[in-house]
Amino acid sequence: AKSTLSLHDGTKIPALGLGTWKAEPSIVKEAVATAIEVDCAAIYGNERAVGEGISEGLKRAGISREDLFVTSKLWNTEHSSERILPACEQSIHDLGVKYLDLYLMHWPIAFKPGTRDVDDEIEVWETWEAMQMLKHEELVKSLGVSNFTRDQLQTLLEETDDKPSVNQVELHPYLPQPELAAFARENSIHLSAYSPLGTGVNSRETLPVLIEDPFIYTIARKHEKTPAQILIRWSIQSGFSSLPKSVTPQRIKENAQVFDFELDAEDMATIARLNTGNKFVTPDWKRTDGLTRSESEA
Ligand code: A2P
Image 1 (cartoon, rainbow, N blue to C red):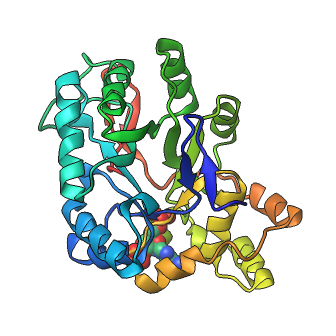
Image 2 (image 1 turned 90 degrees about the vertical axis):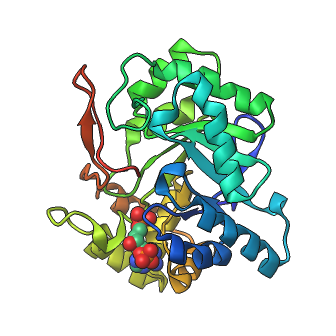
């Protein structure tokens, strides 16, 4: 597996990034400074702290902004065409950068501004088309979506001519989403894996903890690696970029040590049998048409 992956728009995305969801502003600065790539979103409420981490990290590593890949996301309340540009500008400002490498529609659903009430008037494809101006304004290099199912992606492709470069979704051995992965591959849409560790030990009590799975543990022993490293390596070898979230510098370093070993065919086959469909990030808001969406902002 290579450490960067190509997008259909001609740009490249790092195979490994740092997720910042649920990362407290007070500690995320150090975490970001430790890492090399950041994935964030306005709704996480920590973009200013992430921005401080970016400038601190660039200084420490002696690298420039161009060496970094920064992703942010358009929150559900900002879907109407006149709100998109200011929302993106706010994120850029808070992050202290001049442009974003990637900007994603956070969820395929619109909320009325300032609420969590679903706004059925705004179609997802309208928002997606309006987002294209961000590229023309050179505020973002690439555009994508997040939390889209296979069918939602297909609808988007049918309704518009602008194909997302990326779909960032929950992906891990318990939820490998083979149909979505096949559809994305056929359409040259790159998949980024969030919660590649199954959200760590913080996952819901009723579900088995992926990072403690005995099969993952056995593979980890075999390669003298940690379960987290096996899970991250699995996403990368599956062709996904991997976004393990951590605010712990030691773990951030551990999670980056995934380019010095390879899972063999037997390991991949073992992991392929772990598909239980367990989703750790689950819906609680509903549209009037009965479709459910996510409970948390992921
Ligand atoms: P923390 O941020 O306190 O380091 P996911 O990316 O799948 O959502 O998982 C994130 C969770 O996994 C966080 O609770 C994070 O804790 C934890 N985590 C991140 N890296 C590791 C690791 N290498 N070993 C164990 N837990 C980890």
